[in-house]
Structures are given as C-alpha cells and as structure tokens.
Length: 212
Image 1 (cartoon, rainbow, N blue to C red):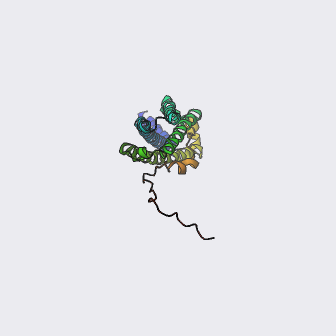
Image 2 (cartoon, rainbow, N blue to C red):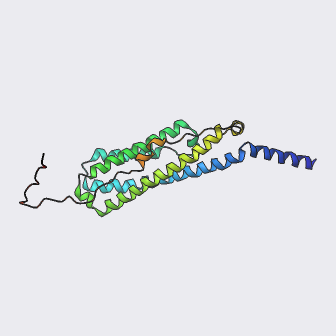
Image 3 (cartoon, helix red, strand yellow):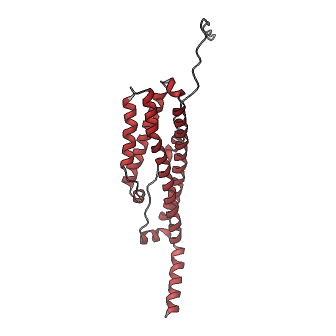
C-alpha cells in the first residue's frame, strides 16, 4: 500500500512538473523579488525628498506651490499600502503607478524652478541631493525594467498551453505591469546645469550678426 502511494505521489509530481507548476513557483518568486527592488528604489527616492524640499526652501521659499506639490505628491505615495497583493490587483496597481508618476512630475517641476536660482544651484548640499536623485531615478528605471521582464515571462506562462491549465487549477492569474512606453523617459531624470553663466566683459562689442 505504501509503495502504491509513493508511486502515485511520484506520478503526480511528474504531472505537475510537466504542466508548469514548478515553473510558476520559480517565476512567481522572481516577480516578487523584482517588485521588492522597485519598492526599495521608490523608497530611496521618497527618503531624499524632505531634505531636497528644505534645501530649495532655504533659497526659494516663495516657490510655495511647487514645494507644496512635491510634499503632497510624496504624501499620496506614502498613503498607498504597497502590499504583496497590490501586484495582483490591476486597479490598485494603476493607482500606485499614477501616484509615483505624479511624484516624478512634481520633482521635475522642482528641478525646473531651481534653474532660476543661481545660489541654489551652486549650493553644495543641493548639488549632492541632485546627484543622489539622478542616481535614484536611474535605479528606479532599472528596477522597473527588471519587474517588467519578470512579469512578462510569468504572464506568458499563465497564458500558454498546457501551463494555462495549471494556472486555472491553482489560481495563477495574469499580473498587471508597468507601461513599457514610459521607460525611456523615466531613465532620463531631470538635470540641472551647475555651470555658472559667463558674463560678457564690460565694454565688449556685441557679437556681429551672421551674414545673410
């Protein structure tokens, strides 16, 4: 009897392996790991924002709307619980993605404002924060790319035959994903030109107009 049970168990294991069960386990764990890295990099960006806002405020306190926009966008991101279940809920995932996109836009506007304040641009603390932000945006793009690829591989397995039968039996469903189209834009974080503007020497004649 025990031998029969062992044989049946072995056959069941082979059947599950042939239908992609083990593949689902591997790919699901890979997508979870990729998602954890996305969250890690987004958190890294969120941690930079308070110091960045305070530094800009010290030189451009009158830019209250822009500063408040960044602060509020960060708060909205923080209000979303990025639980493991979020990646299986298209509506919740879309809200998370929209909130992060809003924060990216608010940070871009803040960097544009910095262009109008030469003293801010030359401040060592601001320059360090700017460098960290650029590095973090690059890491975010790389982490999102990794998640996109992991989920694409997983979703193909969910839809493909015969693994789709295993997916139906064990409840594996297609996961929502980031839009690939905006990856190129995300990988180019806003930059600030720290080179001081060169003033024309006093008494210098204006440059001649180009010949027509």
